[in-house]
Length: 78
Image (cartoon, rainbow, N blue to C red; front, top):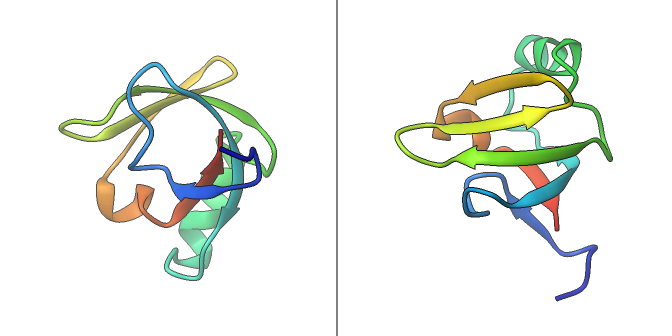
């Protein structure tokens, strides 16, 4: 699978390492700014820690839990 193939953050299994590709327009601009403040920037490596009951990721040393309604608007590449 090419590395530029984008998929929603809700898809990669726990233990996957991905890179943030983009936020889509489904995310409120204020929420997008908050996520960026937590370290979610484009091309930032992320580790998926779990997908249920929420998507939990590790960005550097910051662990974030995202509801699937939010995580599905975050696009990543493998």
